[in-house]
Image 1 (tube, helix red, strand yellow):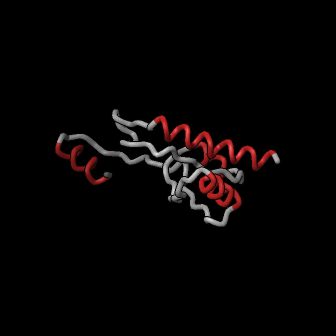
Image 2 (cartoon, one colour):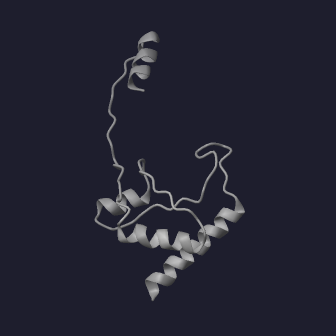
Image 3 (cartoon, helix red, strand yellow):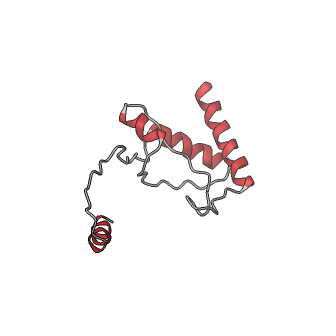
Amino acid sequence: MKTEFQTVCQANGAIFEETLSYGTPGYTIDDQNALIVSFQKACKKQGVSYQGAACGGGSNTNVYRMRGINAVNLSTNMKNIHSTDESIAEADLHQMLEILLSLVEKFIN
């Protein structure tokens, strides 16, 4: 990306100055983490297969984890992410609601 900016600027008589800084580092959570284990159990209870993934980019979870709070992002099976066609099936939202209710029930008991 940097090289592309430099090339376009040079071709148009402009100057490219890089001032990029990384504000929110990604994170990795072990599948044995207590939150992940609880989430896996809630998924299983609802008949949903768990699929862990590395999380880069910026989210509130990145900030929480940087401050020592054990937090995770939960995905709702979005389609066409970050596009004008992004969508979530209503059934997937209902399924996530049931998973979240299972987690709340676990943590309040």
